[in-house]
Length: 219
Image (tube, rainbow, N blue to C red; front, side, top):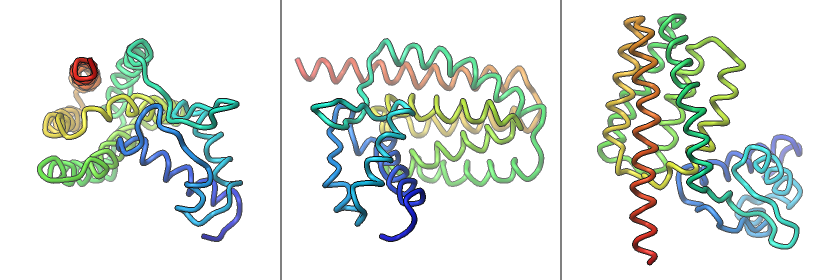
């Protein structure tokens, strides 16, 4: 793979981020520079830069003697992330209901259609990608660039935890997305905010249940 350092670093970063968020790379898993550079056909320099960038996003942890690993997710961290994301998702949905335009609504409806189809038979990575696309477009509908950037970071960090839900909540997720979008289109700010915050809380509850089952199985 050829290109300038900045573009190569972004390609590597997007590759690793995607695998973390769709659950193929698990919390605590080592990210070996040599292996990643061989897999992508790049030198270790853009891989190292990508890992540094992902560490600032909270998706990767860097340790002096252990190297890079996928960030661990503790129940305490998830609770804090959910607490903040619940509030911001509500604000985002409220603004989207107030400021949306036909173009972004059409884009959201297209994502919703593909998401519903993926919920029936799609792969976990496809579901993760479409979920991110829906929330990214909903953030765009708010027309607040600061909020959009904050939401992207929070979404990725909570996505690291929620990846454990896999396909188990796929249908519920997209039913909830449909409800949020309907409220946005109707311009119902209060309902859109309520459904958006409830959506995060439902995903968090599913995470807690899945984590409990995992811990019991480990015992």
